[in-house]
Amino acid sequence: MQAPVDLRAARIERAAGVEIVAEVVLPLLLQAGAGAGAGAARRSWNSSKYSRAMRVSIGSSITQCSSRPWASVRSNRLRCLGTSACSASGTAGTSTPSPRPCWHSARRANLVNGEAIAFSRNQLYRTDSTWNNCDNGHAVVTTTVATATLPQKSTYCGASKSASRPVWEDIAGQTLRAVVTRMRAFPLRDNVGSTTNADGLPVNWGPDPALLPADAPFPAGARFNLRAIRSDIGNTDRNETAVKPTVRHADGVFRQAVTLEQPGLMGRNLAAADAGVVVSNLNALFVADTALAGQTDATLEAFKRWRLVVDVAGLKGQFFRCDVLKSNGSSRKCEATGDAALAVQTQGGIRLLRLASGYPVELKARQQQQRFWAEYAGTVFRSATDLGRTCHDRRV
Image (tube, rainbow, N blue to C red):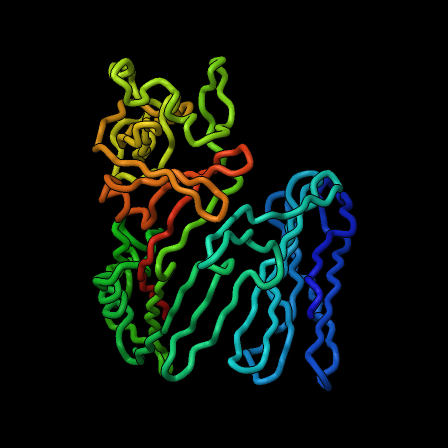
């Protein structure tokens, strides 16, 4: 069994008023199996100064999956900012023979005021049979490489399954403007980001075609890659174990909720006596934020915040969509969007508060997930079902 990769900053010194990395220790065990021998990582110091920070990269080559076991490390970085805070990250990989799955893991370490701080993913995923506390290091992702007839398949934290397959197109001789224009008009959705609109269409992909020469062609050998990615196949439940909703307790003080019933005891809990109470961040559960196409009010954020008020005993809920003040992040002018039915169930020893019906269609479509809450060992955690979805990314 391969030893976990250990990333540690040995010491940090101060030189000319700028924190630098004086030494980085990266012990590796690269045992390639019987007869293959052991290897040591190649270390290279590639530092570049920006502002008052120095970054050092340390890495080794990574090979493709082969018919024999292998182990390797790549893309390991140590970054220091400020007076004594550093963080390091890397990717380790191992492989077993047939059917040639690759194992990858992100290893991270933090140094704050000279003290090593443990890294935790704070994720609990539901597998077919149990809740899996996501590994902080080795074997967090298993990937089976693609073949001529099968896509590449990956599983994250033992539960979140994905598959992908690229399609290549020869674009040699085609003009830059024509290719970028065609890609911006591509009808298939990608994950929402800087190259897409709010619906995931790649309307901002690449440079503005109008700024490209009309007759400049791609050189020989240029290819375009379209990759279809199916994520969270069959849907995936996960608990965000670092996110614990706060509610107002009977003494009027806001603290973390300890039971699923507590959020329904706050003001505006759908009971008749609370019908006139205004919904805000003080009495409703956070669900999600959705971006706006624009915001004309300079005092408000450019997104809407969705909240849920609940009557857990009555298994009823109501969704609201709110403005958010830039000054303090509080919710204002919350408008009701629809009623919901709740369900309380137990799964693998954890109590869950789910939305049985009434989850806003717009919110589900935009977020590609559905919120729920989990109670375990006297603590309530925010959770989500990541819905199966397909996206398409494009690369030249």
